[in-house]
Amino acid sequence: MLKDKLKKYTLILASGSPRRQQFFKDLDLDFEIRLKEIEEVYPPELKAVEITDYLAELKANAFEGQLNPNEILITSDTIVWHKEKALGKPKNAQEAFEMIKSMSDNTHEVFTSVCFKTDSASTLINDVTKVTFKDLSDEAILYYIENYKPYDKAGAYGIQEWFGFMAVTKVEGSYTNVMGLPTAKVYEYLSTLV
Image (cartoon, rainbow, N blue to C red; front, side, top):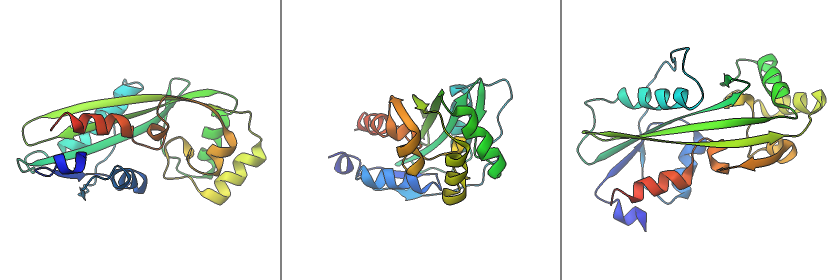
């Protein structure tokens, strides 16, 4: 399959996210991990997918001039977009509570952008998924934050956890996109390289 076809390339995943790393393992792709500290700041006028596109490219550009001809660097960024605002990773329990409360009984969008960079070019792809939450009690939100501590997750929730099973009533689009990587689109793009 694709793993064999990509043998002449080295895939480099520039992500510390255990979920993204697991996706690459589950896609049966060989890869290595290279990380760089990047300050994830974007111009305030950017909206929705413009933000994730910008940040995915920013992360890739940190490797400029450091890639060998057979290497494909993969960077990505995910945000939750709700009420014309990007919801990143919450700094504390109060912020997590406010984020989840604002999405209760509502639909929000999750954007992920993925940048594929070689020594000579870069390509950007992105995806959007609409997620609907049921009307959530304060008690349920507090229970989730206390027991699952979702501080490493955009929008303060993980769809693959207790919260997602309990709160999500509808998903329109890629489920894995909500977890941080539109796996079908990534696989499809990598398939075009061989």
